[in-house]
Length: 112
Length: 115
Image 1 (cartoon, chains in turn blue, red):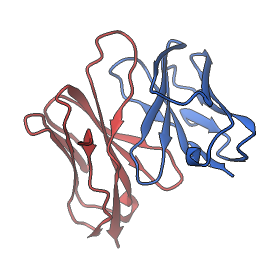
Image 2 (cartoon, chains in turn green, cyan; image 1 turned 90 degrees about the horizontal axis):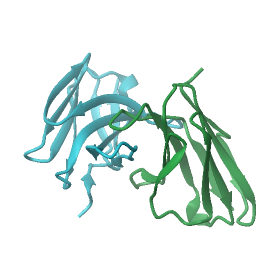
Image 3 (cartoon, chains in turn red, purple; image 1 turned 135 degrees about the horizontal axis):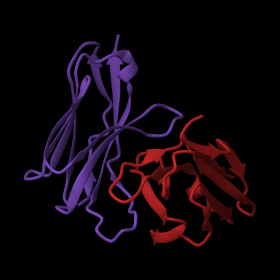
Image 4 (cartoon, one colour; image 1 turned 135 degrees about the vertical axis):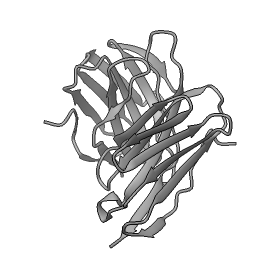
């Protein structure tokens, strides 16, 4: 089983829908991250959780709401998204500070 | 000025050639430097992880960091068609607060190895 698993792999939703992205890591790591990857742009850090506590919110609009119920699971709740939110959303985990981050394969999100 | 500059390519080379991929950065606080490989429809895969200046070798891959020039490189020897992918450089500063922090990425270089 891969180290970081993201579901669903693809999601199409309307601007008024509410959906959630899920990430699960099987590596025993203590830190988890959400990144956004858009075409022709660098990966953008969205949220950081360390030991289930949010330590960084990188000026992300409130229509994105993260949740980390335990050190193995991370969610990104979505509501009233905009077309510019269409992107690949990547989850990563790390053992701790100053440790390398390992990524899942992402959820490809399309907003109609 | 962008924090991390990386030529997006595409960079096309014949099989067996030595490939050189590079990034420049502006933030002198960056201490940890990484290279990720990303295949189409997949997430980034960690290739190399280095701290501060110097060289690190792993098989056909060599990572170099020159902090005085704010310049990092990834060399691929004996390149193979399976090396065709997008290569992302990433970096961050030293975390001394005990919490975790995110990475700053380049845009990625699309590499094509021609058989």
